[in-house]
Amino acid sequence: MADTHDVPQKVHNESVIDSDVVIYPFTRLGEETFLSGPHITEHGIEKLLETVRTLETKDTDILLCTTMKSGTHWCHEILSMLLSQSLEYNTKGPLHHMYLDFIAYFFDKLDEVDNPRLFTTHLPFHHIPIHHVRNGYKIIYLNRNPKDRWVSNYTFLHGKLGVPDWTWDEFFDNIILKDDLQGGWFNYTRVFEKAAQTKTANILPVKYEDLKLHPFSTIKKIAKFLNVSHTDDFIREIIEKCSFDNIKKHKYDSSRIIDPKHESTLFRKGVIGDWKNWFTVAQNEKFDEIYNEEMKNCNVDFIYEYK
Ligand code: A3P
Image 1 (tube, rainbow, N blue to C red):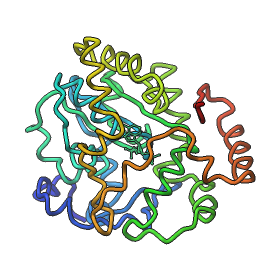
Image 2: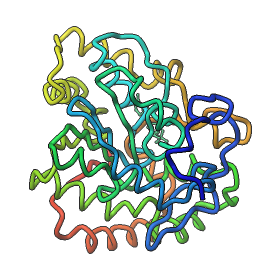
Image 3: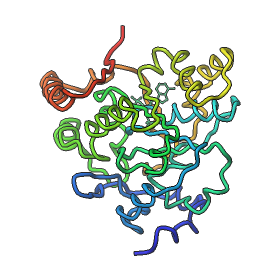
Image 4: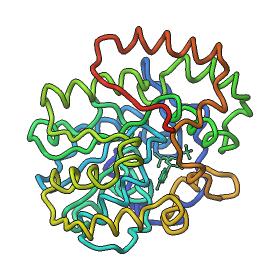
């Protein structure tokens, strides 16, 4: 197996990252599974995870930690505008640019990136850079009610390269109930919530539903955490620029690389409560039962609908 640090001749070779990436069968490591791809096939999941964990970030680096389909691209654009103090679309998706889970592609280019650097990852807490956590560098942790994010995962993964042609019921039984993708949503959420509450790391928790229902106060909170200028007008303009319709038009969907036709399927509905169109009554009851057990010691609430 090649050393991870050898990888990056391919780093900014757009044709590599823009070429087909087959994500399934998922890659298994112990109890966890990860989306597959050439970065894992070539270097091995353990080596990649070690490279991420041991990454020496800077005190100005920001880590955007999210569970897949929680509004990562949306939040990434908001953070990019706040950090750059401009209303220009970043256009690069988090996946294309500084996505830790694909670090093999850009590892040797990191020093060339302007500060403050914005990294994104879907990896669970125990895989994120230790140096970043221990030194109290900033982490934005984004999450979303699990029912909507599972629906978003299903519609997103469906038809992607290598992914079986699951029905929703099969996805519910094989993926949702198993909950091992990227370490599992329950584990991810419990650990991040605890780390935020006990201040084990310097974490600002943000929820998709807060961005949707209270964008002004939520973005203001983020700006304060990042310690960047934020006039009320600037925040209002960011909200407008990052509205669902605008972001769909302007944000580069880097996840096209896993779509057979390289089409964007990322900006779908952008609403709270779509899960009701998918979960049967029985599936909803089953999920609630599991949720109540898994989350009984976790102090977090999510919004599942709004009138
Ligand atoms: P849906 O599939 O429910 O529509 P990620 O970037 O983490 O993959 O998340 C994608 C989800 O965020 C999709 O959810 C997408 O539509 C939603 N999203 C993206 N931009 C949004 C915005 N400006 N407002 C609301 N939802 C948005």
